[in-house]
Length: 33
Image (cartoon, rainbow, N blue to C red; front, side):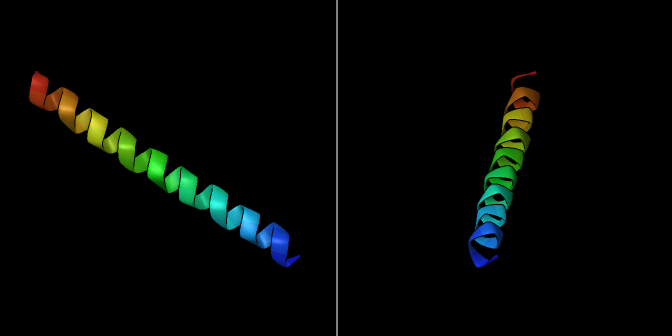
């Protein structure tokens, strides 16, 4: 159970990181325009 929970936490971290990167990318695009 603990191992599975840890896996979910890792996935959540990756999802948050990807979301943050997407936000940064969008801001960069806005700056370009």
